[in-house]
Length: 395
Image 1 (cartoon, rainbow, N blue to C red):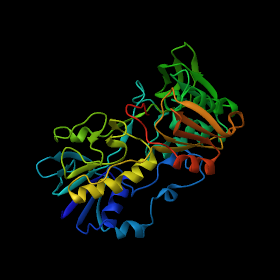
Image 2 (cartoon, rainbow, N blue to C red):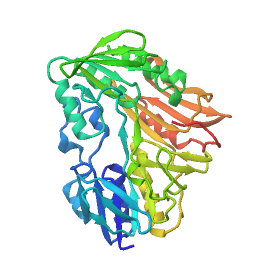
Image 3 (tube, rainbow, N blue to C red):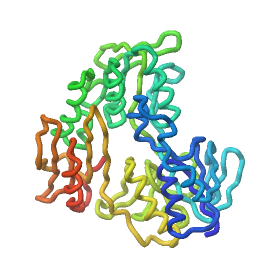
Image 4 (cartoon, rainbow, N blue to C red):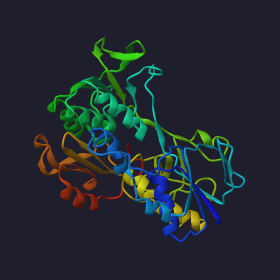
């Protein structure tokens, strides 16, 4: 291959570019990114950046020298409009045509927008640096009432940051118990309790019926229970959707992401996908899985790039999903494929103390591990996890 184009300039795309050079590709390397910034780290956006502890420069995934050493042609602030299946060529919305021999799809995902929020000031999502800058500006103007819609990890982190800033925060979640599908009811309860323990009001089992606004700015949120919450700022953390629209008509199989084989290779042998946009086949599960975690976006490119350069799937993705979240001074870490019916055993510590190590077991085998402020024990337990059996539920 003389030219390889990486579409996506966030963590997955940057890791792919690094792997291409590390694995010996010395041809033309083009990196296309929708944002105008060089690759930066997203996890701090909902935490230290939102709290004003770090600035935009602190988010960079590398030094300028690191980016320069890639000898890549950066197309930043550009959107891919089409993938030409005949030659893997890329058309950009700007009109530029990129002739290429191979493609790494790393376009990630976009936040879902709260229905009825279009054109209403004070309503935010959090995915990009610009999102975080706009939200931080509003949070530091006066003492706004903040309503966070969605108690997943992003919503929980935003609520935690707002509480630390001394703001009045309410978190709203449609499920009766947030994260139960991921962690099971017993341990999800521990995550849910963190909010009220730190002065954040919770409304679980309540949907959003309407955003109330005045003069074009949000003033309240009416819930399905009939309650109306005062709101100067609303943050919606209601999930994401993979960025695959530009691949329509490309011949690739699309279903909540780009369908790939076990090595990240798509229907076209010279096109691979990584990160949030990739739905990779897991032989150990017997189905395709899309994983929206930092560790996955960082780790998948090594294997996908190797298979792309080899022209055949020689290596499979076998890593266990891993993620972490920082909330209210608690480091939460999780790894594995678990099912709500798995047995949960506390290996060390106490749930009530918010410092513990828990293991999920199935048929006597460890298949998942969750830790609250127990990083050393988590590392040991994570290494001992068993491979999952077929048809195991996953997040």
